[in-house]
Image 1 (cartoon, helix red, strand yellow):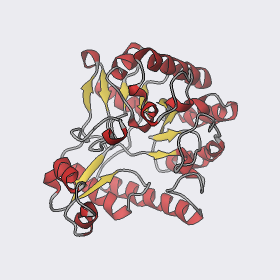
Image 2: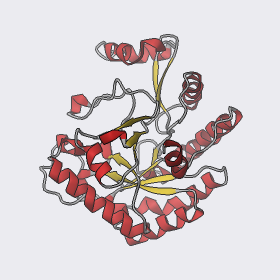
Image 3: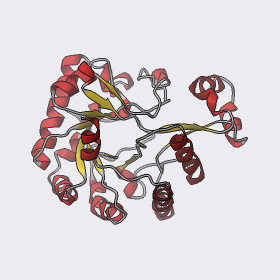
Length: 304
């Protein structure tokens, strides 16, 4: 899944004026690279991308393969109506009043439908900022899958959600269990991995303890993304996840990483080459293990 979004300074406060989407021009070449390896993509599109005519043309082109799909990603700070105060707490859409959250979701859903000719069926909250009302709002609008929960991550220090107790297994949730939650896959590796989130949280209270445990091969938290996750760690995490019976591995990256200089993960041409090398090795490893790519349609059919 690709967080298909605007470019912004990752070290600066979020700003509603940051709506540049120049990196979307790199999407067709990246799409072809994955398509040549049999991987259908799901592009989770936010408002600046959905409302940019050139980007909409590109999105229609990449889903013409009949396997890839468009979903929605709600960045509240650039998604009208912009009626909230621009403070860090409100960058998590689930913290907003239900009516405002609903209005933003309607604007985004309508914009994506207009851009690509079909309504999105999968949702991700920007900054993983799902809230108590979000699943009901999604169900009311025909969404089938949510992928806002980042397993074993905790954003409560920033007034965001705490997913410490959420593993990588998909599960049903929402009204009448009508939504399938597909968390972003994160795996604990190392000799002490059975300690899981509880041990990881405890280590966070001690200076440099997490780094020491990681370097000693005792405990590491590994998200399935090429962004800031070393290749060897990702391969170990895949092996652990499969061994623990995780049936769907949810990989992700941000679309601005396709162009050097837009994210801290891909700063130059060497980083971009490393990005594709990461994927090349990971996809080969998955194929060797008999793990097959799944489209959004595959996931919805399997959950029906």
